[in-house]
Image (tube, rainbow, N blue to C red; front, side):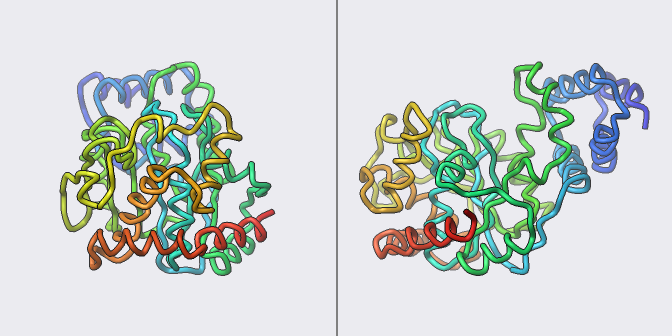
Length: 334
């Protein structure tokens, strides 16, 4: 594959095929293209906008050149946000994962260190003494015994390190910012995804339909890439598309300061612990309950009402099962 031909086609406003973008990733990992050409490609895609097939091809390439995590569990969920909303929220998705696991559902959480917030999933997990691993036996023990496994992205997506310096130099979002939620190395059949805007919601909706998985995509109308309860929020799933008000779930509207993750990793860790220990601010607990509930509804293939799913999530926290799940997870992975 000649990158100059690809770039000329893009200058002619042509779209690339799924196979072509997969091959581009493979070529990048083999150092077949100079950085200047990769920079031009990423810039051109960002200006034009990536297509569904192009995004899927990049996903295929990252999975093909990375390390897979083959779990001996058929149905599990990942809860993740695209990031980049620059709201510096606490670790809502990660906390929700332990609430879902505490309710008896299997979870394979994929995450990384923070990019635009104080604490990402890997930050808060590591700050509890967890050691990241790609050892498949240990990963399977975690999901089988604790109900949840954590997959630290840097151990699996080998292609990302080849484009890291270019992405840093560009200082604007690229197609790789869209790929994080799609390259979970265990390839879950269920996913709850938070997006920062409705354009992303439409894109991922088409992507998930092509992948054939059970999904929920959420966006808070005021720009959060998760359900923040600070405003109305939109949810798209395999079964429906709807705008909810916090009151629809029995929750009060949250204040922006109640969603923030603090100024340090330690403050973010304290909020995470407070939710699981059932001593958090009511708004913090409610935000986690809302996100966990829609994750549970995805796992239930939409067969349970969101009100039922909120109560399942609430019982996970109130009974101490979410906290017990987290303690077991730390025990296995430390």
